[in-house]
Image 1: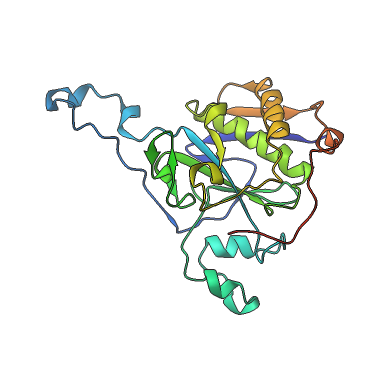
Image 2 (image 1 turned 30 degrees about the vertical axis):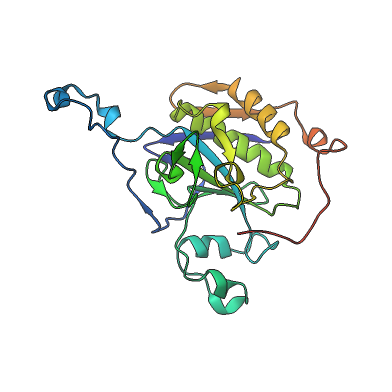
Length: 243
């Protein structure tokens, strides 16, 4: 049984690898154009930054359907070795990032401080609000739309999600979505292989063991690997991915 503890302080997730990406910027300030200037001094400091209230799940693999080779890290750091694979030439000029990556083995890598604006969503809309990068956290799952994610990935993702929701309580379960939900027709990830019911059960179990000071403890869950592999939950493997 996996035992994982995460703590978030000042936008940094403890217990993970830090792999800084240059592809980020500051989140925009809220629009207070309707607020009288005389009220400026009464603003709470927390109101001076855009609220983070959306969590977006993506997938990625480089080259497509190949895993844990360091290419995702290089891609998000703008140092992808283009000559290593023909596909890399198609994406070499892209400057993108995510806040976090969960590898196939369940390792968590952070690229951008959670308080900063990672470049993961692109043209997007959630609940009538556009530019989801402004108010979201993006997590990449190493995988493809049609290849089942691993038990270790779900465990790590749920533990990280629980920690994020403690640190950013405006993120409710209804605002945890896939990239395809905020960019329909343009994006399909995390794909039909992502087991949303299982993931939300894990979140619920993790939330029951959350504690104060931005801690999330994720221990001794009853939702073991056999629950993930129940008939009908996993889909056939395939060698496809949309990046």
